Length: 248
Image (cartoon, rainbow, N blue to C red; front, side, top):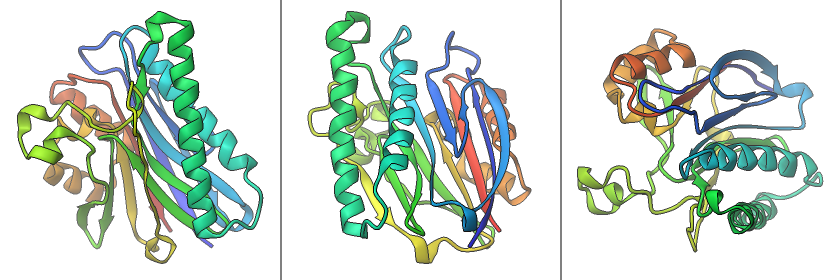
């Protein structure tokens, strides 16, 4: 049994006119606001904490991120009880295929949504086990014993080629015309420890604020909204969304 203290925030930034990011903070969808909650896993069968960074221009990116998070929450809540780790992984592959088709179909119906897409990063709690997942270049970090570690791997040309000039080009996403999207998905229950602080964020934070600064801010107990403010103070060139959850 764990107690989790969570803050989430999503901000439009200084340049963009609309916010295409969204956070699913356990029981609330967060966009252009800040949120705080606490939960006890002893009384909860399953939940999702996730972040999606939409893309596609106009309103399409915000549609892709919202649809993906809402569909994920519904899918996880609708899973039968008793799935093994391998069965859960298989079901998530089924979900990824399904949400890709849903996002693509909206583009076929409405040309303004053609090839809209979104990243996805987060944690699913199901069957007393924790899973973390990633698709795209949104990130998941962990602060343990005062040291910050990046757990996820960016699915980007920057990662493939090691060239900073490709940093905004992603190679994997949900929708977005991606033909072979995939989820990095790991069960990490035995490594989800009291005292850990986890942070998921869009690249609106990681592109604007150095990891060393993020580490110091998390050491000092910074909320998700304070981290968003740091990105905005650094220029806020993109939407910025963050969710911080501490394991008690």
